Image 1 (cartoon, one colour):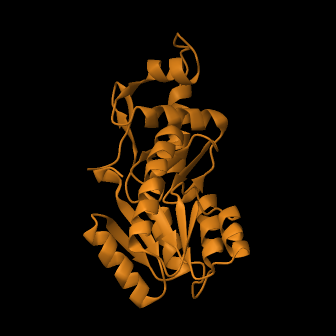
Image 2 (cartoon, helix red, strand yellow):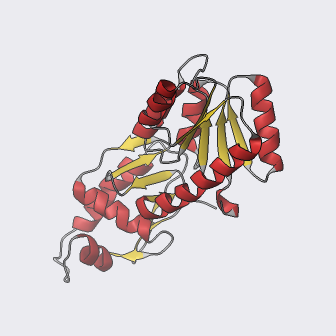
Length: 230
């Protein structure tokens, strides 16, 4: 995994196992967040971009498989490494079919864990580049044609999605109305309407209302820019 994409979420309720994982992974150069319950995992997983999520099958509140399914529904694309004492063939098959990308049975060798994380991390980077756009806490899934802000799905009409996608592909650039007309509406002339302002207003309300910070900015007299703070 590259330097900027070495953050891992460890979902483990056993304090001793969790402590060992966090210590070993941190020593190996990873940034590690820890969740001890399914609810904590859902909160962390929807709010941050992880290279890999390791998850225990048996959690005290929500089981690991249900957590995986919910995060997938919320648009989280990070690969899951299931780490579980349930090691029968049926257990492994069920975990993989439920959305897991790999399965490691306890007890395990930490060297093997690192090798599996590296393999999943490489896959994560490839998938993210090909199918996911991110700007701040906004995620745009190009395969599902869906957008999410802090894990919550944004209801967008097809043209609104096209508009948001084009702005995200040009993150940080000021996009003129003429560029939007050409690339989103396939118009090479100004129809002398306020269609751009109307659509940007709709998308801005859906993306930015009730959020911690705005992503869509109006550049007076020029156009619009999608950017996150910092």
